[in-house]
Length: 198
Image (cartoon, rainbow, N blue to C red; front, side):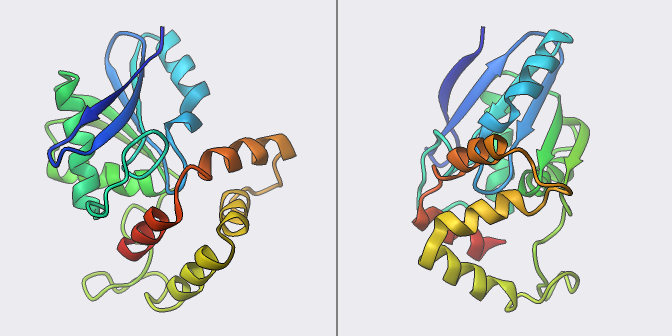
């Protein structure tokens, strides 16, 4: 039976966690604007194959609390580490999708003892844009201003395109509707905080 609960991490923020199955642990970390709900099918299949599957909602997403701080990759990796620690898990396979892959990679770097395997799904794993320490990717001042403006002007349209555009072929309308329903749980203030940290 799937369980769901809030786990308080080191700064007191409540992180929503879904858990299913028994066996070696697998932690699933979603991408920006989504929630652990996107892993529904994977949770079932992994649990049926003998795994203890944990899907967390990153702070500011889904059922997790949304403080005005703690959106750096280091903080997000600490959240994931705290979730596993609270659940008594000393080693896990960690799967991260998009931004979740960046969090998972940071977690593997900082806590290699905790991350037994790392799977990155549609993630560059490093940074969304150039910085002084990471001179690759798109210019930092390029897309950010446009994205922030769109987030404030019509966040529903921005997020609908953000979730649909990455597909090679357009998914079924009901798939987009489902993903769109999940991503609307990220409020505008938290969305802005996330963008400024990428």
